Image 1 (tube, rainbow, N blue to C red):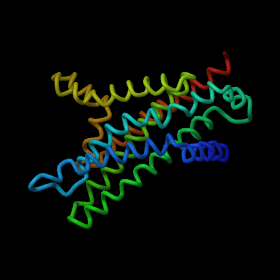
Image 2 (cartoon, helix red, strand yellow):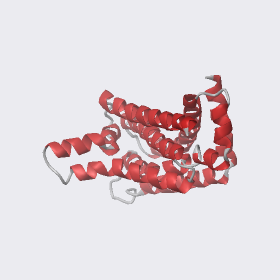
Image 3 (cartoon, helix red, strand yellow):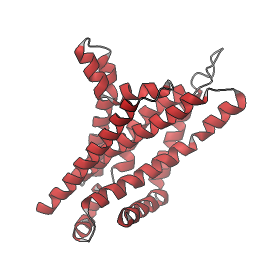
Length: 237
């Protein structure tokens, strides 16, 4: 745990000392803010964060690759990955440390959106249930999205390629719910179960289903496991 913490703290310092991270934060707040105020012009606006939660998943699909693309790809490009692999640090500690740093930055981004909750509490009386479950779902969604980015960053030394491949995978996982609305029967159920959106929507409605939690945790664990295996394979090259 000490090694994981050391790797994570190093990466967190890089995040908060890099202008790119603050640009990502600015973009996230601007886009999520747009989704939050989108329906306020309606005669009877709903006192909820459902629009924000739905829009934030799309924003995370765009920004998760930007947050993770440099984690391992930069190490490979600079040649420091060899020093890392020959040091007394296990591969899984490297992956988990770097992943945790991106997860901490994600929590920082979500903490900034608490301003929206304050606004709702001041000007309306929202149901707190869907807010709590929505944030839980958003954290789980972000965890899974970041794990995809970590894997693609492990597979290449080019940050742009890592970001593009990660973005493609996340778009595919995001769009499967849309495909499920086009097809029918068993295929509709399969596509709905495979994608992120089908497991996220219940959280927005205030429903916390253990099956959805297990799904996101399983996806996260799977991609992190693949990342560890990909990093281990470099020792045999």
